[in-house]
Image 1 (cartoon, rainbow, N blue to C red):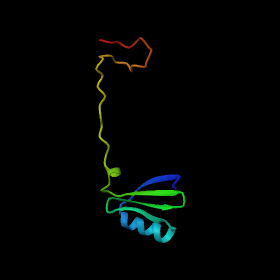
Image 2: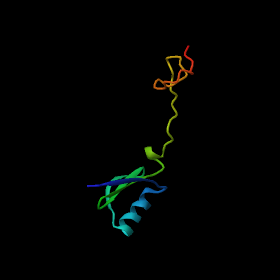
Image 3: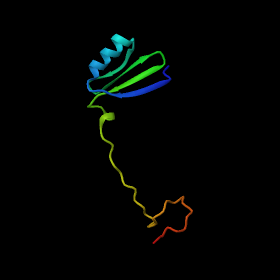
Image 4: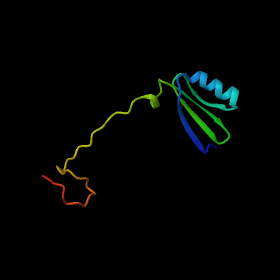
Length: 84
């Protein structure tokens, strides 16, 4: 059972697995090289994300469209905002 999970962005997943398993007594849990892997030790899990993983991709910017033609958030009670 893992109580804490931490994602590390790494340049080389294979090298990172070797380091954690050999030097710090982690066990390999999941292996999806070269994109990612996870290693565990007691209640800790490290998610090793390489350059090809989904965690390394830039997030898409989305725009919120205001269909009410109102320049205030719906929850804002301030009446100084104008609605068209």
